[in-house]
Image (cartoon, rainbow, N blue to C red):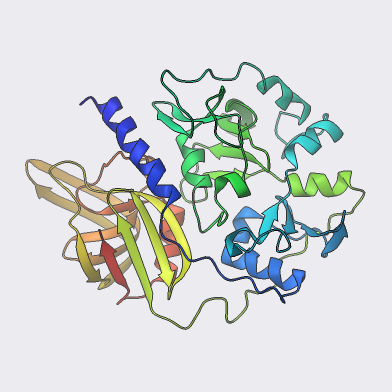
Length: 376
């Protein structure tokens, strides 16, 4: 099997697995006020990264309780669903801003909302034999322009965006509910920097615009553009840019912490009790250096450490590896700064569980020594 065909075949399995990956969303009480509902949602789903600062109090608009944040607008959907994962929804702001503010620059970048229209056209034709759903291709994931994921033309979502929108700790309702369909191709932006230029990749979806910084390693590589701020201005509101309130003391249950890693899905989940705290794509041991399956506990942690070894004809010496957590012998979960191919099915390690540096830092701060680690 070729490298490309093998990766695409494995990605097909990964895409299916992500749709059924285990998670327990934080419950939303039917009696909870919209303010508390949105605050709880914010802290359970990494709102500092997915939503940013608060731009308005809770408002009633068109009969729906809403709240504006920097990166989006949340809506109270409890009257529409009994599914707690869909109790909070994101307003589909992208098309609204394209129509209402076509000359407004997106995040101060050299592209306007109106310019997104140019990326509507020339949808990618259906891949040969495509029968609906989504399909892993070499350059990304093909998503048809259909809410039913019917066999029609669509757009290709780069893998960095695809694994981001499939993170259940960020988007508990699933990518279709919380992010929506792609409505443009992914396209390059060249942004001036002190050193010259930097290349970014942008793609618009129903409910957000995503920006990928290919040079980001210690921070989130993918960010959501500030559509919530722009939509607030368009709605006649003055954004307040208020920092979020402190996280509730009882945000997570007083229960044991555990980490689960799936080698088949190339994914990691961190739980406190049965509540999902963090999930992230990983890259595990390559052929001949497969990551072993089993259950252990973290026994040593290092904020930075040089990892070295010699085995099976290979020698490695990697300095300054971040957020290293050993759980069995020389096997560890740690940050990886030398590639970004996580969750794609490409396995690069000598047996450790590699994870993006920012995710590794979050996990390192959350998991004490003694935390259970299960690799399956």
